[in-house]
Image 1 (tube, rainbow, N blue to C red):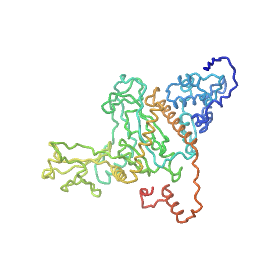
Image 2: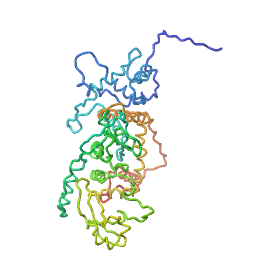
Image 3: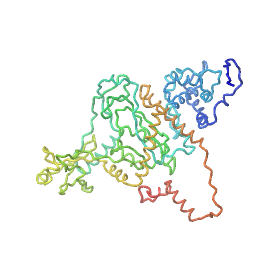
Image 4: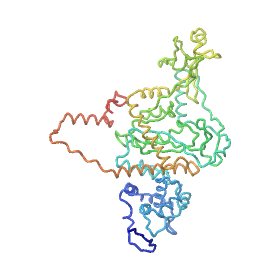
Length: 516
């Protein structure tokens, strides 16, 4: 017999919200992973001690996490979902008879309170200012590190574009001063020392130049650029570093018209100071994987001087390609560099001697003798129709790139560089597909920075919660016939010391590749 059930609207039931949320729900795992009550301590100076009670700030930040967790990108839709979603109500700590905060409450509190920087004391006992979003991001990382989830022995760094909240048709020309490179002072000091040592004429200091760029009239802090052959884009650039397990360690937002190598300094040195060997012992950073955009002498020098192994990809040599008209055109690779004499040698053995150096770029100019080129049988293959001498350039820090190229040919590079596609690339894929950072609705670099930190904090928290909820693997019971072998125990201990980096011969510059 078919049953028909009538709807009973006014029936009173005695139920517990705790019983309605499944035990394996993701929000239960997140709630066990971290307690957000630490927010009160940092936000207390931003609230008045008199007046009406405010909305609990933890509830507002949990709503922001839920908005990013489910990729809604709209606080209004998240509040509407929280009105009917029992799991949301349980996680927020709001009973069934209580109202969900209005969707504008978070935005109003953000513009009035949460966007301001808060004075905190770091691990060194020094005072510094941070936003509440960076404090939350670092707190989640500390919790993950305390549980042993962070593996910073090999880190990976890359950048991704985030479309700005600006009309790309509203662009104007503007003349601005070119920013100094982060290594300019060190470069000029080294060039001055080289000029005095070799008797060169002292190079002129690099002048601050003005350049004309495109600027968005809607969001001036964003960057206007053309990516490849595509149309004009207005976006931000998120420079991000992650560890071997995919936890985001640092992220810095800049304008998208800046090159990767010029925005490399801040996130790299932040990660280096937070995950150095002095703090983590033998588990400090040993290598960093980067793409071709970072393959510059200055970046290679900064990494190697920090005691870290750079993992850089192969790049095709720059210069004119061979064609059908001139299939055997000689390039820089056809000249041998003599390190002791500081000259380039051609096929005939004629030298190209240094003639000058530029403080702006750091490149040394090498030029051949006109008499040698006039008598050379390879003249047509080496020089153009209008040239009378051969000119080559070499950067003052080229030795660091040469060292990175030697590392590229090792088994160590092959083993760890391939993990880049499984770590930082996957982080960007998840962030764009599942958490909505393809574009931003905020304007201004600082506000976009807060949004990116919130997204990556959400991703780290989700990963940590899922890892905590995993059942611990049961220890295998060994057979009674297996007796203790002291030689085998010492061998395993020795290998583990090498893997962890606690033991390494002084004469060996890079780790033992066949064991690590």
